[in-house]
Length: 157
Image (cartoon, rainbow, N blue to C red):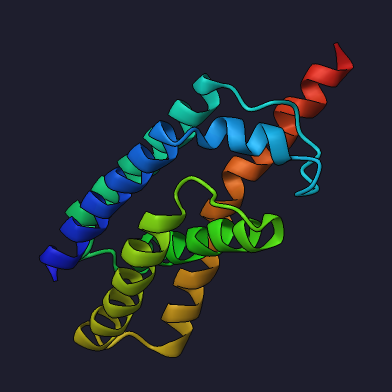
């Protein structure tokens, strides 16, 4: 199972690199009104902060996956959900969103395979899988909450 979590880490690093070099920050800032994002402009610091925390979570999942299955599976669900966050805007805007390629061809197949194999190898119940999915959703929501809170605090000044 370790190989799947190592692959999740590798694909996650590739994904962040794709977002960075193809200017995800600029893409979101230019399209935030069309995407109904009521936030201030995203800065490089925000991108680095959020993605650093993300990579740390993936590394932790690599280390603890044998004993903390729900947490580790939630990180796999997180990357699956992140794919949707790239596909939907790309379809809506009819253009490439940085991170889309690694999400579609890395995250999605790897997360599906990992969820299935990890669930069966660890005899996880449906309840445990659902809880993992919900935690993955919650973790995915944290950067969104961060940007909304930051925007509200900046507007009060």
